[in-house]
Amino acid sequence: MTTIITALHAEAAPIIEKYNLQKVSDHPFPYYTSDTLTLLISGMGPLNSAVAVTWYLSTQTKPEKLVNIGICASRQKEVKPGTCYHVRKIIDAPGGKVWHLPQKALHLPQASVTTYAAPQKNISTKTELIDMESSGFYTAATKFLPKETIALFKIVSDHGTTEIPASEFVHELINRNLPRIEDLI
Image (cartoon, rainbow, N blue to C red; front, top):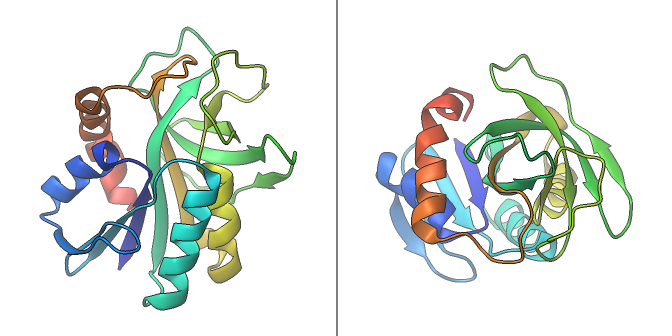
């Protein structure tokens, strides 16, 4: 069984549709499942992501794989929205903690991500990507699971803005990249 954690319903919707996931509950988090896949929507931010992962892994059967899929910003203007990355390094912006994830031979480009608690307009980090969930997700996940069973995939939605992208746009970005990551989840 694989479990996917997303922050937004717009990130989850294409996965729910493609795998015909059925809603199990809304409390404490929207939670969907099938025979082979479970999906949880955590809400935005590292704290929400950490709480969702902790709740799930402490109350449900531990999955074979735990995957975070979500949108992010790219600090590099030449990177087009829709570019999908496998995360290899996470930096927590407020605390400066760094995690190096196990390297995998994947067909996706790899990148580093810095996690902030709020959207960032002026990106000053040296990592390629910024997001709002990776450090919370990974911190909680590694308390319960071996690092080799955890993966993060980030899809560029913008180059730094304080506005959340439109749901339809996010849905399209995730949907377009599902074929690239589904064999990994």
